[in-house]
Image (cartoon, rainbow, N blue to C red; front, side, top):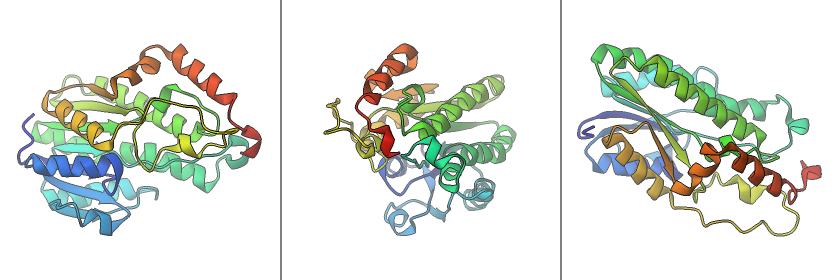
Amino acid sequence: MDLRNARILLTGASSGIGRMLALALTERGAEVAVAARRVPELSTLGAAHVLPADLSRPGAGAELAGRALDALGGVDVLINNAGVSLVGAQRAHGDADDARVTFETNLWAPLALTAALVPEMLRSGRGVVVNVTSTMQAVPLPMLGYYGAAKAALAQATRSLRHELRHTPVRVLEVVPGATDTALRDVDLLPWRGRPPRTLPPVPPEAVAAATVRALERDRRRVVHPRYSLLPLEIPSVGRLVAAVGARRIDTARG
């Protein structure tokens, strides 16, 4: 895919992977509309359009899609990158507002944006839907059940969408970041007994952004970065083992 002049809607662009993606895509010559809650951060990106949006609010996804179509005149690439997390025990949060926000932002907003924009892509004869999930979909750590479940649901929906669109000109790309040095690094926020266990160092968000851009240009279906994060995805027992080992060090009584 030639990204020059491609019309792209990117959510969650104010920091982390989204911010690096906005810069990389703009550098490639794409016409990018960036969306997030923090407008001051968006205004420094040099993107073609700034679209403030709070995707934790029901209905915000469809509303943002309409504004993006008006601003760009069409959307060739939708990148569902916005994400939030919740560190806490399910017995404490249940289906409270903060739990629902996690699913609204990580799952329902991407589905709403997809439903609003894919028909336009089909009419134009081209398009790409990019969903940013997480390796946490395969690592069921305690206290991160909401985030993991929402990302697992989005990953499953992404695979289903790919089959639904297999005979159309619209492609579906799943981006699966592993340990990334962003503000959404919840492993550091878990109530560890003593010091957190030693892990491989997280990769910088610009590395994930670069891998995503390459995947777009090369028509890939999935990109996992760093590559070693493939292990729990392809061998689920590894993800369960990692979670079981980690659970012994997490103080779940503090949830």
